[in-house]
Amino acid sequence: MSNAFVARSLDEIRFWSRIMKEHSLFLKLGFRCEDTQLINEANQFYSLFEGIERQAHSHTVATDPEQIQRFNVEVRNAAAHIWAFKRKVLGLVLSCQMPGANNFPLLIDHTSREANYFKNRLEQLNSGKLDPLPDAIINENVFFLRIMADHAKFIGHLLDPSERQLVEQARNFSHDFDQLLFQAQDLDSMRPQSQTVSLLDQFLDENRVSVKSLRDFKKTARDLIEACRIKSIIHPLLADHVFREAERFLTIIDMFEQSLASVKSK
Ligand SMILES: [Fe+2]
Ligand SMILES: [Fe+2]
Image (tube, rainbow, N blue to C red; front, side, top):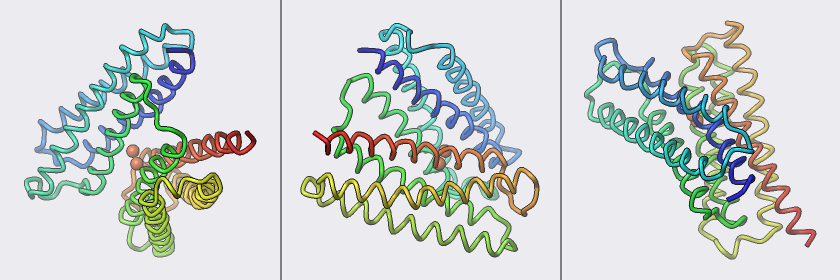
C-alpha cells in the first residue's frame, strides 16, 4: 500500500461518486410524482454520494493508506447499494409497473453497469489485483465503448425529433460505436494471441479518434443545450455528465498508450 494506491483510489472515487450522485438526480427526474418512495430513495443516494465526494476531496495523497482502504470499502458498499436500487427500478419498468415514467430501461441498465464498474474498481484496488496491461486495455475498452454507444443512443432519443441533423449525427455515432464495440469483442475472443503490442496500439489509436469526435459532439451539444439553442429534453447536467465520461475514457486511452510505449521501448 503506497501513495500511488491512495492517489488512484481518490481519483476513482472523486470521479465516480459525482457520477453516482448525478445518476440519483437523473433517476429521480424520470420518476412519476406518485413514486414518492423511489424519489426518497433517490434523494438518499444523492446525499450519500455527495458526502462521499466531499470526503474524497478532503483527503490528499498524504492520507494514511490504511484509512483509504477502509474508505474504499465504505464507498464500495455504497456503489453496491445504488447498483441494487437501479436494478430494482429496471425490474419495475420492465414489468410495466411504472407506466409513464421517463427513464429508458437502457439508461437504467447503463447507470447500473457504471455502478458495477466503480464497485469492481474499488475491490481491485483494495485487493491489489489490477489486471495486467494487455487485459486491462481490452477490458476497459469493451466497457467504455459500450458506454459511448449507449450515450449516442440516449442523445439521439432525447433530442427533439425536429432536430433532424443532430439526431442523424447521434445515430451515426451510435452505429460507429457499435462497430467499434464488435471489433473490441473480436479482439477479446482472440485473447491471448491478439494481445501483441502492435495490435493493441492500433486498437487504441482507432478508438481514440472516434472517442475524440464523439467527445467534441457532446461538448457542442452541451453548449447548445446550456445556451437553450436546441430543442430537447436533455438536462444540461446530463449533457455535461456524458461529456465528462468521454473525457475519462480518453484519459484512460492516453494512459494505456504511455504504458504500451514504455513496454515497446524495453
Ligand atoms: Fe453515467
Ligand atoms: Fe454513462
